[in-house]
Image 1: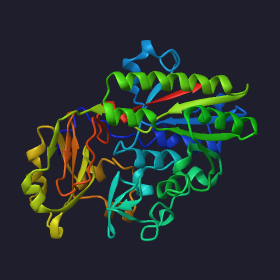
Image 2: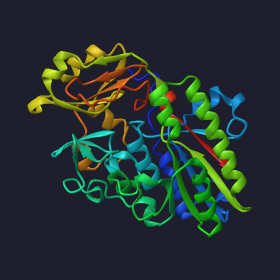
Image 3: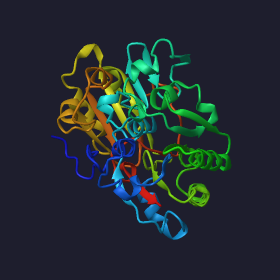
Image 4: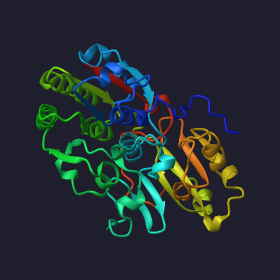
Length: 364
């Protein structure tokens, strides 16, 4: 067994991001979502992309709203990446069930970029219909208003994780607040909202001054939402993942592994190895070349330890590789066969506490 000291294996219970929406929709209290919250006339779930628990904790003194709130850390899913985690938040199930097992997913039609719904330069809406690729009904079949960027409306990923919701696009953070308030005042018992600015800033600038300025902006944004909500409404704040800064610590996959694999999937901090011609023997041992900076784990151990939840569908299993290289240090591991891989300053995807622990904060 691989030493996984320091790794956060996701919860499959109430302390997971996947437990929030079911509690709200079914009006069933949990250790996170209390009876008092469920008694609210309206509940707003605000998901801030990239808002890790440790990042809030580190800057509490500069965050008058989030920093002073009584929240609790909960786990996101594996891998700790946007496509996988948002799908778990919205469907209420873990990745082994919904099948969006990473940022880039191995399919018979090519490597699917789940956020863009493309394989290479080709749009995959016809070859991989989102409703077939991700068959679990979002929001347990409910139809809440979903307040997210207007330009996301027609995307494949929106169809995969937000379909059936009443789309309410926002064009600026100010109008995000407007859309949330309008939906609550119109009588919606549940509103889902999403903001991605913090994640973008971290990817481009890292976790220094730009990130802190954006974090302060998010804090003020949350305060604005609270101010605009009528009495009797509750705001819940959570996130899809945290972040780590990798800077220029970006390395190519070992040449022997390139020769042994037909390809890789996932992303730079959670890289799946797909054995060439199905020849798995020796692949785990060869991958240990990266064990100085990463956890190197066979699929059998991953399934046994329920990283993707206790239930993994046959379709989800086929999308996984035979070995996972999961970054332990602040590094990125790139496959040179994928020339379109982005050069990002801060990243996520692995199972370190910085990436796996996200906040759950309630404002009534």
